[in-house]
Image (cartoon, rainbow, N blue to C red; front, side, top):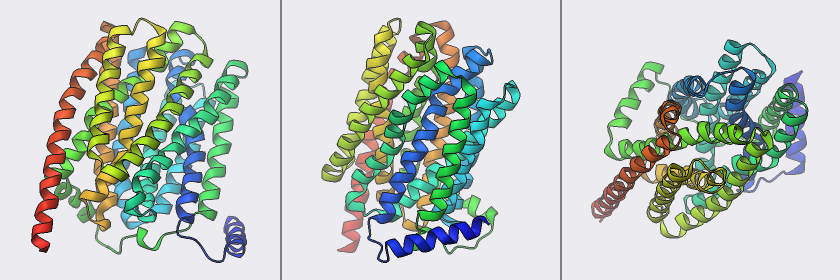
Length: 417
């Protein structure tokens, strides 16, 4: 019955648009990303609160469970990259959305171990969702506009959170986690169905490679050994350690100071609004001047935000200022990643390179979550101080990365001549 319904919608779509413009796949992908952001952002924002308040876990325990979910994300990054190159971008994306629907059940069960297990599915699904979506974006968008399209792509998560987080805060303060989880479940299922029906499958989005899974896994070793890919992975890992801390600690600390879910929602909305504007500016700058200057600027903002939180973590206002700056910088770096990948890899392996980069992102989230949960018990500002020092080193790494990238381009031009 589902196949018949899908076929009927496909015929209706073909009649409405017999000639598909070049930008149509990108626009539809952005719509999918918006709906996905409306589902995923409240999950991310309120799961630490749910584990701490409803299930009674300490900050250290919450960090441990969030980190355990990230381990699932590492697994999905490896297999998601292969699925994107072999199975196809669209199918990998749909698998991720269905995983979000399944993980929404975590808010509907009061059993701690079951809720944690279901939440781990969210990180497993996030790998498929991210790699399928980013690979689809790279295939659908031209390289000359990839910076702007990447910014709009990540707007789906940020703007989606702006739209859904205030509603989520009101629901939680008045109705509780039951209705909240049910709403996320329905939204995710509807998004998955719409993606299957309306998002076109790109011809170039699937590899013709028929090698065994063992051989495909072995290609990751060769990819990681490339100096540029290894440096790119570290550029993803080191800032993410800070963002992993902030993602867990800031909602917990705001909730601890205020006791109001709407205060957590306000932080989420402010950070996502400002991050949306930052992504647009950083994407435009990357298209005009290349990714070097925008990347260094974003890393500099990360250092300032971490230092500010370290110095003023006892004050609520610091989370609405320096915490928002952290979100702007972190999301800006995410928007720059597709541009960095497309300039350093071949088309038929971009899914796997994105898999490597996303693996290091997940590891960074694990390390950041664990370290943040332990350090905050010693001193509230300590994890943020450590992050400031870490990202100072990341700036030096970025300078070296872009110098090597420039030398590689000059060598390629000489070979062509």
